[in-house]
Length: 97
Image 1 (tube, rainbow, N blue to C red):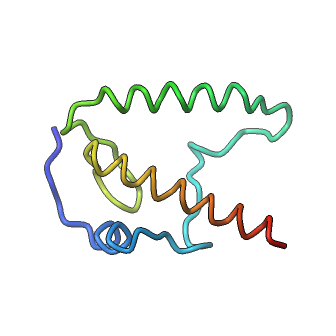
Image 2: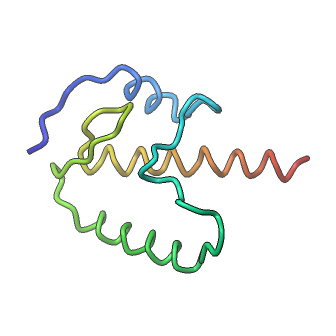
């Protein structure tokens, strides 16, 4: 069961709606074992399925995050939105060069 706890990094970054670049490192759990033969269509399909599951989640279901602590459903959606925007900004900067 989710129990709200104050987390300073989460409070600051959610308030700013911004993640700093180059500070975080992807956990081993989310890194691909190999970059060969990655089927992006399959990855996008899995992501879409997980987002549908998230939409069905109860408000106090929770997810552990290594920096932001335990997140409830609303906080998880916020974190995923900010994380996606973070990567979109990086992609836009790459395309400028």
